[in-house]
Image (cartoon, rainbow, N blue to C red; front, side, top):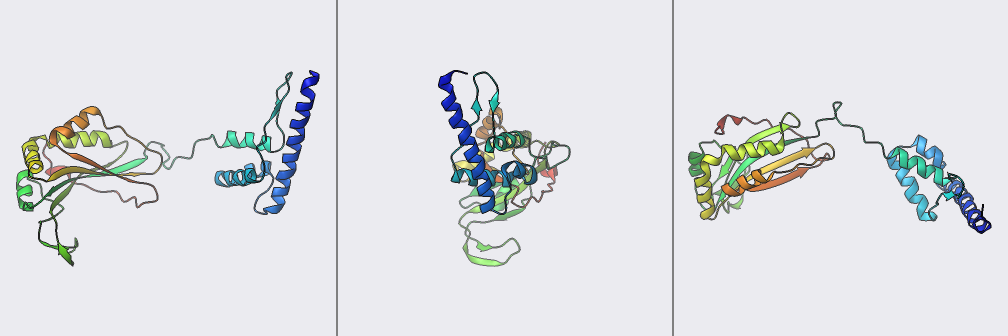
Length: 252
């Protein structure tokens, strides 16, 4: 070993020993934790992360020392960090045994208009709404309980699709709905020209990390119909009630 390297390696080894002692002191000050190596084996991932986050608030990072002639030598907290990096790289357990299903969804068609009667929308689309009200009518709850004020605009909505991946694909479902509603293109344009709006309200419920891509042709079809796409994302902490939809009323 070159003589010039000896002081540097000596300081590095001394630093490792100092951090190992700090880990022992930290264990004594925090009775809920054990030594770094034992903590990795006896606690779940969140506790491991909490341990090391708290430890590094009390000490500076510990780096492995490397000899020019041999492999790196990692001691004390350095070994614990190495174990943590290997263990935390493992994937999270799947929510479902088949590791394929990770979200479900529900899609509704919504129409708003400044003053039109909801019956006009029903007759034009030939679909019975799940809920509708007229602009200027007294407000009330879905079960008919009166509320203060009047409806500021006409509202009309009906569920059109629901499913769970991989049996049902959200993006393919959106494209299919837009394709089936193309025959009402002129009516949707009229609603827009009169100050109203039309949208697909998409409720997405996911159990773990999830993502999707709305293809350019789907977005082009939505733009041609002058549809808005409203996306409501619900994480696992939200209710995961799945919708049942009768698709019989949508044209094919």
